[in-house]
Image (tube, rainbow, N blue to C red; front, side, top):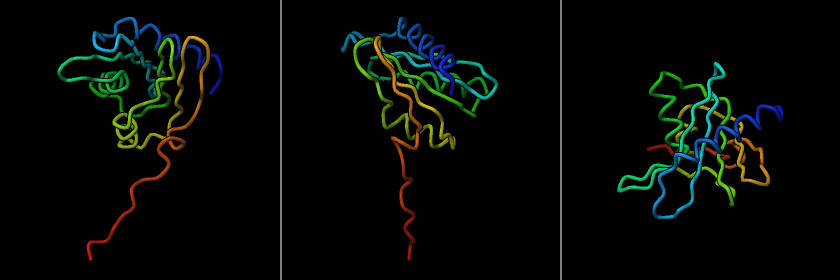
Length: 128
């Protein structure tokens, strides 16, 4: 994954964070999701009685538009490194996506693969 694309994903995630609704934590998080045809979907965290994190929002937006092949996902927060939640990690594995993950804040970023943070599927246990 080249640096130009990483910076583009970070910028889109940062822009998405501007739309966050986070009255409880006051910690906006943005996400950008790159799908197979190079379209980028944005998402932000939504704190309500039915919370949704930024990754869920971006993924569900893409799915609702017919995209299920993901190439990269980026999470951005101003002051911390917002690694994807367990729910988002599981959702990405449901779509067989060992994609690039960028985690960024205002100062730095990390690049990893989904398999780095969700390395093993659960063991298959025979019924007998």
